[in-house]
Image (cartoon, rainbow, N blue to C red; front, side, top):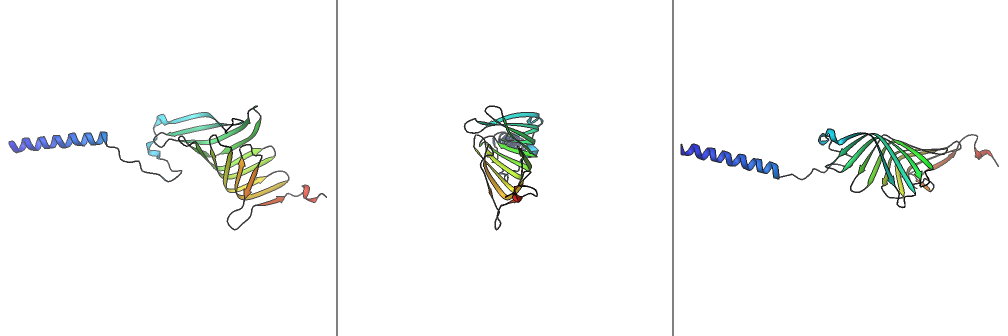
Length: 195
């Protein structure tokens, strides 16, 4: 009888310690590779439809009006996943600078870093930009694009490996990849044949 009481008491202590540990012990979060999200931790309340967000450059002279059909809020990782992404870039006077279309974007809430992935298409006047990935810092003035840059207009084509530009897309630097250069080609019937 005495042994039975000791076993029951020991069992109760183990259960109480187990409950206490499960409520108060939180293991360190497993660090994911960049771009990987813990999809199994996404709750129905963390998903939103038809969302509009506005982001600004450093002096608020350019704004990005982002529309997305769906947003997943990965609250534990402090990341928003938006898909598809449609951005209209406007001046402070509400003039359209360009439109950007992409498959999805990840926005890190703590750092303000936005990673847009594609295929990505930017349409500015008669220029059409294509890239695989764009990085932008919320409040920043520079866009960085990688993954096969292709720019075309009615008159020319420019190809490269990466691109750096101001947020207005007025000052653009295109770089070639390892062992190859970026290049510029006139299209047939353009200014190349005129003297």
